[in-house]
Amino acid sequence: MSSGAGDIVSRYKEHTARKVSYILTGIFLLFLAAVYSISTGPIDIPLLDVIRTLAGQSISPTWDSAIWNIRLPQVLTAIVAGAGLAISGVVMQSILRNPLGSPFTLGISNAAAFGAAFSIIILGAGSTSSSVGTAVTINNPYTTTIAAFVFAMIATAVILMFARIRGTTPEVMILIGVAMGSLFTAGTMFLQYFADDVQLASMVFWTFGDTSRASWEELGLISVIVIIAFVYFTLNRWKYNAIDAGDETAKGLGVDVEKVRLWGMIWASLVTAITVAFLGVIGFIGLICPHMVRRLIGDDHRFLITGSVVMGALLLLCADTVARAMIQPYQLPVAVLTSFLGAPAFIYIILKWRRI
Image 1 (tube, rainbow, N blue to C red):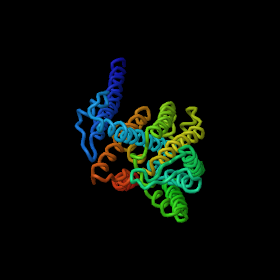
Image 2 (image 1 turned 45 degrees about the horizontal axis):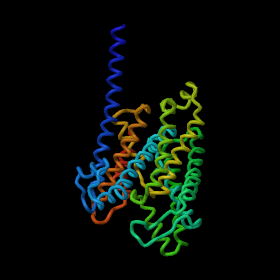
Image 3 (image 1 turned 180 degrees about the vertical axis):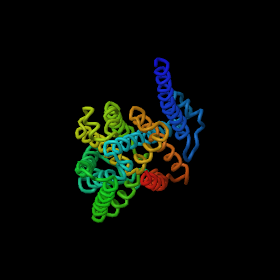
Image 4 (image 1 turned 45 degrees about the vertical axis):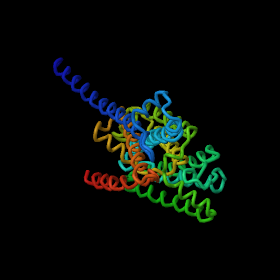
């Protein structure tokens, strides 16, 4: 018995070490991708010079300015936004017990976008300019964030209401999300209809999710919310594991399912709201990344949450780098590329899930 127990412990340690190694490998790849992304642009900067600049050495005033003021904020924004959307997706899929749950498919991103549009056009939180790089400047980010959060929470409240109805199937939940997304998209178009030409052009441009529009200040605000949400989700990782086994099982283990579900949706919605408020709608990251990580390390939230953070950051950063280099000297909004890649993956997940 002692030898058998020792073998079980040994296999468990190997199993855990393999999951940790996947996460560490992802972090290493993320570092390499970040350095490469900083070096890529209309003017390529040698990788060694990028490393030297980041280490504090001044190579060239032009390159120093490009790295510290343009490329590094964009790279870090892609990392933070990708991580935030990914953990929002993995938590939503867990607490709703819905493999197709994400801020995008459940309509929360569209609701947050409507709130941001409302604050920019109606509340005057955004100013416009003729520069392509700054088509919309959010001069009052707090108003925009609060408005986006309020409407995201309206969408969240509807989802939670249906989640409490016994017998509600995942298919119905997705249909509700699609309907809500359509509703808030119609509301955004309604606001655009009464906007002037400059506001309309600016709002259309803003809707395309783009990581290049975030400054250091906005990056800091997004980072704070994402970090707090990550800490909260990590502290509740065992509760999410229990909910995956079913509400009754979780309650039998002492988990307050309703409370965990409510606060999980609140934090996931806040992360989504602040990301959409500053960057626009970036779809499918929250849907795809958790499933990619599950294939590598399984459903254990002790590793799934951290793995999703790394995978989301890596996926959005790589997509942003490709979008930046695809049609130089122009920069394609990263949301266009993620939607092209995400739609086939979404269909695959639906077909695979229906066979289970």
